[in-house]
Length: 111
Length: 113
Image (cartoon, rainbow over all chains, first blue to last red):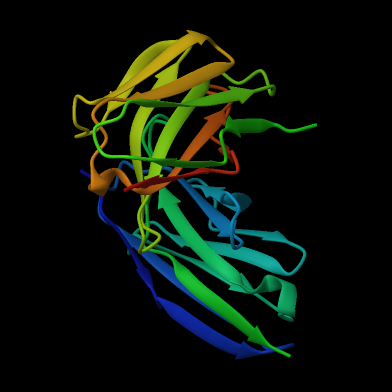
């Protein structure tokens, strides 16, 4: 089955700096790659996603890049703010019925 | 309006008991899921239902039985609870064939003593 690895497990940045979280996947059949933000005591919230026919997608301060050849994708957050502090998860899927999640990155934005 | 709701939010029970967690989505989605998040925050899918039919059943003990009375509901029943079942359980839904975007519920924190 699919195996998704996520790095780093923890990340601290100064407010205003950029944060990058990286994920690799093993199954070349995977074609959908979402990113979720989980705040304390809440469920994961979809923040951005990308399909395998696209190399990059942006939504305001958040962007995701995908390298199908290398089987890795990354989340980029620019101009970080304290409210960006949360746990971020990447995931991979090829059917929409089965999702494989990374192990999470705890992001802390220091004011 | 809550898109995906779960009840209860907290559940404390003793070993050996049977308990249920309910999930409802008002998004008109075709696919619903149950996930388990352990103490290390690792998210693992347990079940996936599409239009009330079981699609994915990961390696989950038989003590866990999902039930989907209709497309908008997916309940999780757990028999003979064990200490290791303590975790946060999340329900989620997605459009299905028209889209894979998942929306998660707020979670149910289950503590087995």
